[in-house]
Length: 51
Image (cartoon, rainbow, N blue to C red; front, side, top):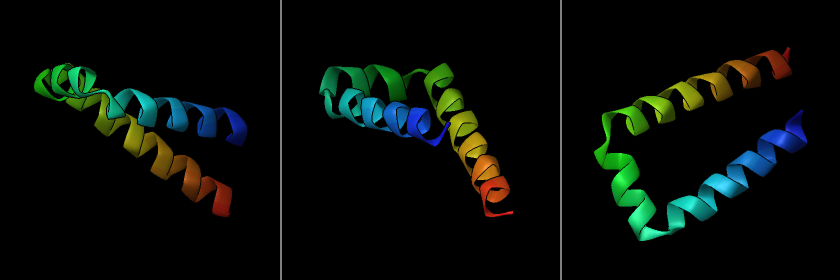
């Protein structure tokens, strides 16, 4: 599970590094919402991993 999470994170970093992707992603409200949902899920899974 953690490996898949890491793979997604690396892929997201690569996508984010492309300027055309970054502009389209952050300018769309859906992209920002998805980013926040992803961050919240990461935080929740991180908390459960600590337990």
